[in-house]
Length: 480
Ligand code: SAM
Ligand code: SF4
Image 1 (cartoon, rainbow, N blue to C red):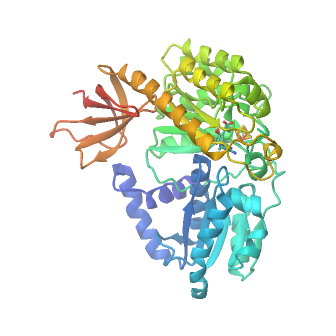
Image 2 (image 1 turned 90 degrees about the vertical axis):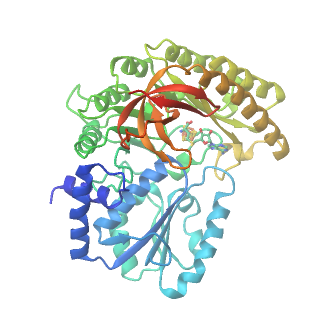
Image 3 (image 1 turned 30 degrees about the vertical axis):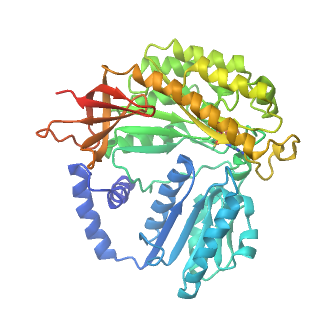
């Protein structure tokens, strides 16, 4: 059976009611196949964390279905319960152990439990000590070994581990991805991270940086386009340090070239990418956005802090001036690019003056959105040993000031769209408000009304005139 067919069915099996016609055909076919195969093994998967985790779970689900398992919607129905974890902030490990203790009561029913992802990699076999009813612990760098690990679990092995692959050169590549949205989907292009920012667990939990070949990424993008996807988001902890590992002499692609090539795949209307790291962000990315209209006019470039002193302590490898140089490139692009960022407040030793520099950076850049976090000490990271911890109350105070300043900036920025006609991808409908939900190329939510006679199709692209603005969204009317 060709892989593409299997992928289509996996995709359809998880689709919602808004599938296009071609998906409904695959859906009927999939019901027939699933009824005739009637898999006995069932699993329930719960996912926490970033887009990388969400997409990892799509690939894990695809792998399990290929191995004969059926996904169910509750723990009660499942034989195998998997928990894909995140450890980026807070007391993530404690939350995982609390959740696992909720699961303990199911042990008598013969259910098996598996912990996946960053907390699995970080806590390793300690999980078996604290939750002896867990029979598998697997970090993301070992997902490619899942089929063998599932066989071990089924054979009754009580301690199956996938924790030794942090030095791996391999990516988790599979033709069996179970995407839930039939219109837009993720493609991982690079895994792991070699940056070792002082506060961050990712290099410890996701292993070293390794890229997929551009041929493999492009094959997946074409396959998705054939299945009817129109939007692709390229994923990696640091997509800008993408290094094509193979290719004909002179045929290796840089990140910007890969981005452009994905944007040129017939049928693809929008391409996004995340996350970018300022140190590796090249001007060629802006050139690609200028040249290829399908590349979205939105860049997420996390700055973390506006003060050089703190940026250096964070080991971010760039200065405020270098960061602003990249912002200046974006502002010179042919299309107006929407810029968003991540900021951490209360890094050890951050003074009021440092914090004031972060506030002034917000004004200078004019972000369309900022994801703000209180610094959270993480195991193994260099900043764990730094003195000058900032009290939690002070972190909260700074966070509030930051969010309030950013809200004012957004109010002003969103207002500028009033009267403009923007293209949206239709994402759904808010029945209570009788409004359709759209997303612009800038990655802004633009809700809109449409006359009763026109029924916008989810996944279609329509023109909408913005008529009102809010701090985080726009409201408009369908242009007929
Ligand atoms: N690779 C991306 C980059 O370099 O910006 C970020 C990936 S991380 C999953 C997402 C965000 O979480 C970071 O940009 C940072 O703002 C935040 N973060 C990471 N570690 C943190 C920590 N220990 N405390 C607070 N926020 C943290
Ligand atoms: Fe973490 Fe820094 Fe790597 Fe981003 S670049 S994942 S913040 S270590």
